[in-house]
Length: 496
Image 1 (tube, rainbow, N blue to C red):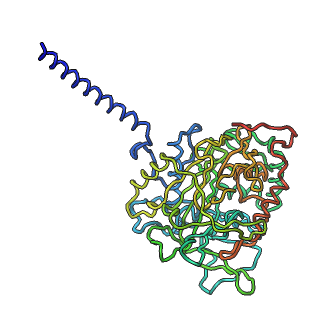
Image 2: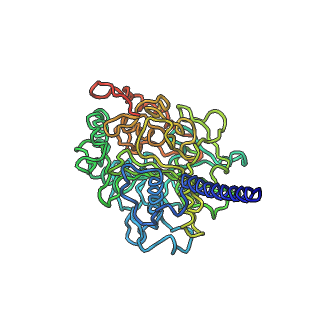
Image 3: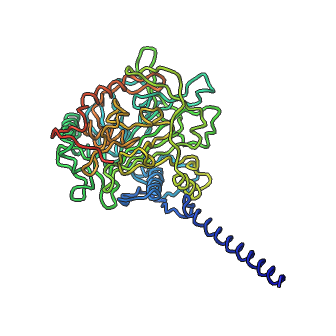
């Protein structure tokens, strides 16, 4: 009898153990299913044309897929050397047949520079013309071989007047300053060229839009007659339809490499940058710089408040980056500080890993990662990627944790986005660009604003800024009419 009891007891323990193991395996599977998706769960296409649209209720996975498809398309080889066509890919090229690490010219590089969009000459040219830059100053070439027709024109030396950014600040006595450029695609350029080709017409439309933003708010939602069109005299950038891409803008951050850097890990280009000679004349120079960050913003039918996505070089945080704040006169003050950036989401990292696994091992883009994506505006500061920024483009608190009504009031939690009839106090990139929608009437674009453009002297690559922050603050304060009290005089509550 005792023997039988012992046998049954052993069998019971064995069965319990087996069941427990089975439940543990089941629980493990459940836990794994809730974790960040594995590489094989993504659908990211390597296509030469950017995606034209995204589901209106896109989840985080769809957002990062969309972002990477944009990035891959814009870094496709340009067809310019074959047909002199800008913003168009060489459809015979792929990421797998390029003998080098990257093409000699990518699609996004052929976008129109901001000085082509807003030339000092006040005469816009045909989009497909060779690069042509127009400033107030008479520029001097550094030498007879210096080119002024390169596609990368680094004419910004600071983060929209907020701070200067440097690399290797704790290593060398010399500062290696980060320089920037901003560009627009064919859709935005030709919209301005066809409707507001000179400063007078553009400023009139901008002021009309700003002063009647509540009235025109209906246009800043999912299109009008499914076209995102505005009446003549109102700024409403095209959002595309069908397979057409819609408005896109990019901002790129570059720096000079040092003997500590492995140049094979960077996307590099010969660029235009600016200095001043002993007589105070502006000199344009050519040198090789390395890309360390890239923003892409994209307006679609479903996302008229733009989809914001940003990338950075994988080593950017270990390259001893540091920023120095600028005062209202554009002069540096205080000590060098470490840049800010919120952590990258696991699903974003998983998407980057997926793309890296599909790229050739020699691809330069193995060294660049997606930082995050913003799409639908919200006033909830706990929302994921609410303070989206990368490490070297929005580095100080003013920009990195922007959540205000203007650049002059970056943290007042004021309204900065009008979306589907509601006002939001959005954070990060989208909130900062949104302030231009309400305060400037430029539909999320800093490149169309009225702040000393196109007469602004080009920024100087080895000097302090030229008072741009003061200009921004003055202009925004002029337009700062209490955002919640708009043209109809009524107050509009913020939407969560």
